[in-house]
Each structure stands twice: as C-alpha cells, then as structure tokens.
Image 1: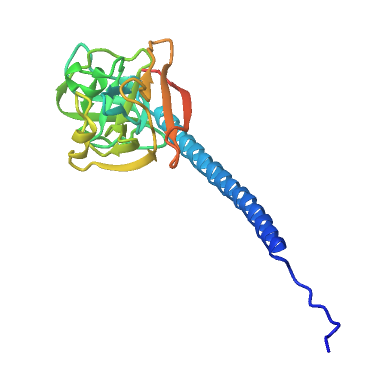
Image 2 (image 1 turned 180 degrees about the vertical axis):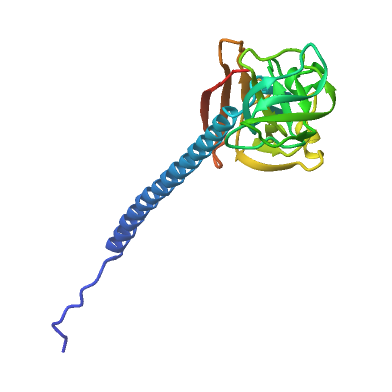
Length: 273
C-alpha cells in the first residue's frame, strides 16, 4: 500500500532564489552600515579638527593681547615658522627716569595688583623689537633691587648707572622676565617658555637647547606649506594704530590629509608704549 501523505519541500530553484535575495539584502545592508560608520568617523574627525583650531587660536589671541608693545616678531624658513613675544608681568607709570643724565635708580608708581622684583627687566617706550630685546638700545634694563613702597611709589635700582634713550609720552613702564615662542614645526605647534632673551630670534632647534626651557604641544596636524603659507604675519603698527597679527592655519584630518580646514584670524594687539 502507498501512503496518501505528501511531503512538501523547497525545490532547488526556490532555494537558489532565496539565497540570491538574501545576498542582495545583506550587500545593501553592509553598504548602508558602512556609510553610516564612515559618516560618523568624518563628523568626529571634523569636530576634533575644529576644536583643535579653536583652542590654538583662542590661546594665541589671549597671549598676544598681554604682550609688550612691539615685542612680537616672526622668524620663517622652509621647515618652521616661529612667533615670539614678551608677556607683561606688570606695568604702570613712572615718576622720574634718567634720560639726559646717568643714575643707578628710577622712581615709579607702585603697581596695585602685582610686584616689581629683582631680576626682572624694565622697558620704557619700546617702539621696535630691538628696543625690547637689545639692552644696547637703552630702553630695557635689568633690575637689581627694589625698595619698599612708600606713599604708593617705589625706587628701582640697577647694578650701575643707566640712562634711557627716550622717555614715554605717557610715562608708562613695563616689567617682564622671559619671552615666549609658538613654533610650527613638523605639522605641530609647540609653545616654548622659560628661556633667556636673545637679540636675534631663536629657531626651534636652538630653543630646545636653552637652559631651563620647557615646551608643550599645543596643536597637531597643521598642514601649512612652508614657506609660502606662513601661519604668522605681523601687520605694521605705529604710535596711533594697534598692531595686527594675522593667523593662517591649515588643519588636516587624521584619515584624509587632502581634506583641510582653514582658519584665518586677525588679532588686534594693544600698542601703547
């Protein structure tokens, strides 16, 4: 006897059709997920580049605004670009300084929020970088000692008699100790500090060998093509116009060096010597 129950199943053609359909669906699903993952990576990297560019521009802007007038200078080459300036420790007005005579002291109005210390440098009427960095210009002198404050005034002493080449029309003085440099090198920006003042601006290699210097990484993936795309430019200044520092930074993404983000920013540097 034969059983009347029929066993149903898939034919070979049906099975092949199902496999083909599933392959097509998985292919499009994989591509869709891949596009989503790539989009996430792109957005994340773009945000990281944007955050890095904002940080370094904001840092440079804040520090430049605290620089002694005319102390900002730039050194460029095919492999690096450095901008150097001198931060103000304190400032105020002086009462009397030796100009047409020689003395080993001067009198100033004591600063209200900070102190003048021995070992600092006092600069009066800087109208060029040389008058800040070069002591032979007779506008910057090393302080030997400082008297106590008496009736809001102080006497500042030097190791020998000095004479300033010129006085400030506003009788303004600046106190400082060491310069600071930001250097673009090998697609990275470093900040150098705690090194001795030099008449000639130092290269990154020279800065790294200075006694007591320390430096920190401030930005990376900065893809300026030196020397054509200079990241730091100084605009001309005079006694009635603030100086301008133009920042031009080209940031590249980690996974796409050809996809660059450009940051152009102008910094107004107060100029009141």
